[in-house]
Length: 234
Image (cartoon, rainbow, N blue to C red; front, side):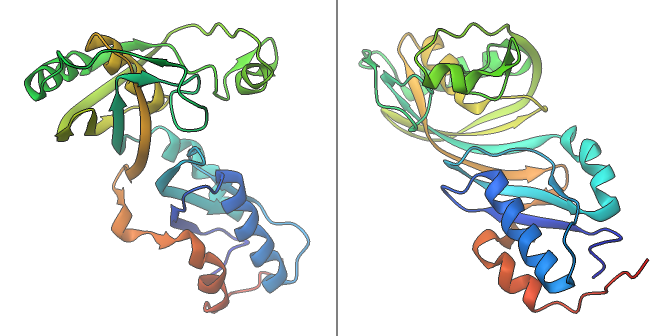
């Protein structure tokens, strides 16, 4: 493989790793094996540390394709706990409020999630990489500052209820670039007259790239060691 000229790798990001950690480990390993000081390596869509799943990583001249991959449809499997919320809308922060769930049924959930299919306006989480006056929103939120973000237009192509074991539900979501599944968990909770936060997230597809095509993130360095690598002298 010629990583300097450019390669595209499909990787299953492990739980608790940041997207940057995955890219850094791959870049460092490739630089050592190639005997170079610098190499372009980038990914086509961030996953939160508490999420797992498909990441497309490009090297060399193939990094020019990153934007193309970013705009492809993505599929997620999300596990949501109803009846409680957290400031980050996931497990990064502690529960800050609880809500009634006695009125919620499987039928109600199945009916309400249909309302999110199509074009929707979504307010991103305060704990997000969105910028507010040049500052990342998550930095402001972690400092305890109030963060106001404007709604963004996005598209949800499909939502399917996979499991309903109240107060926990599992859904499959097919959506456009820019969708925050954590925010969707919040909004589904609100639509159900309760609250909700994300307790598990796996990205199962980007475009036509699925999980079964991915290298396990923990094995990326071993994968590179096992390759016959072409060293580009140009």
